[in-house]
Structures are given as C-alpha cells and as structure tokens.
Length: 217
Image (cartoon, rainbow, N blue to C red; front, side, top):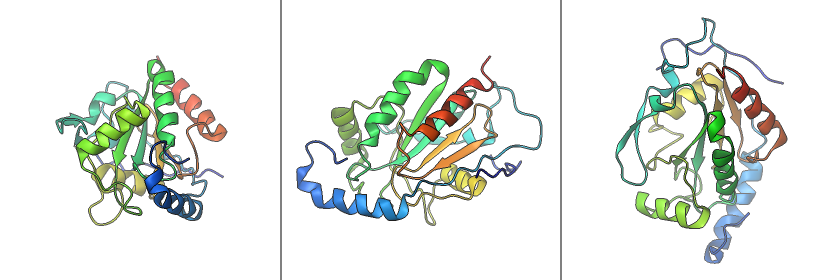
C-alpha cells in the first residue's frame, strides 16, 4: 500500500569481466536479498499548489561535482523533468542494473526522464575506487551516458543533502546499493524502491510512465 506525506516546505548479475571479484558479487547478492527487499513506495504530495515546471523545486536545489571532471553541477538544470536518483556501486551483485538504467535513460530522455547516479561505498566496500576509476568502469563496461556524480555518502552522519532529504520525505533510506528514488516533474511526489526492484520491474515501469505523463506540456 502506498502512503502519502507532505513534503516539508522548508527543505530545499555479476558484471562481465570481473571474475576475480566473484566472492564480492556473491556477498552483495546475498546481502541484497536480506536488505534490498522490494522497497517501500511512499509518494510525498505537497499540500500547497504545485510549482511550475520552470521553478526549481527544493529537492533539486543542490550542487554536486560531476564524476568525470569534478566540475560543480546545479541540479536545478533538471527542473521540470522526472528524476531517477540511484546510489551505485561497481562491484555489487546489482551492478548489472547499470545496463537497465542506461536503457531507461536512452528510451525516455525525450519524454523528460533523467537518471542521476551517485556512487557510494557505504555498503560492503563495493565502491572502493577513485572517481576516475569509477567513471572509466561505467563507460567501458556499460556505456553509461546518464549524469553521474562524485563518490558520496548516502547513509550515516555524512549523508549528502539530497539523500538526506529523500530519506526524510519518504521515510525510506537506502539499505544497499542501487536503491532508487523517483521524483515527479514538480518535485512534489517521491517514490522509493529497494535494490531488488530492477529498472524493468513492472510496478516501477508503471509508476515511471505515470509520472512522465503528469505535468507534460
């Protein structure tokens, strides 16, 4: 069942070629079954009137450095689009989801979807590399073209402000790599999905299609 809560008004399978890390992949897959779950879906609806597409919603009022060159990027550039936020890792049993995320990006970009990847080493030490190593891995292994940002924390005392906001709004924090938050065009609805909900999951796809239709002008 889905639950709705107001957005606070004051809050701005195994990877090919990685056989040597089979033990890591197995560990991640097992832990994912325990922690990933199917996730909870909790839309957050604003009590006030919806913001226009040209207004940057509080959820996007953040700046993060781009993974490839560490140049600051303003998330307000994605205002008016449906945003999928994912915490990623290179050596996880769910790393293969990069392929599905890139497919989503290519398939629905013209409809207004943008996928944002945030590498994090919070779970199982499965993102140990440098930003450059992560960028090279994503491009060479999966041809990732959607926006990626520098390695960050998505849980714990140093959680980055976007993930802190998303957790507060949905009541759902990442429990493993490849947790997903789907944000509506105006930033008033946030849906949360656990790691085991893949990019081709039926429920996820239905929610995505609904958000892509809403507010499209």
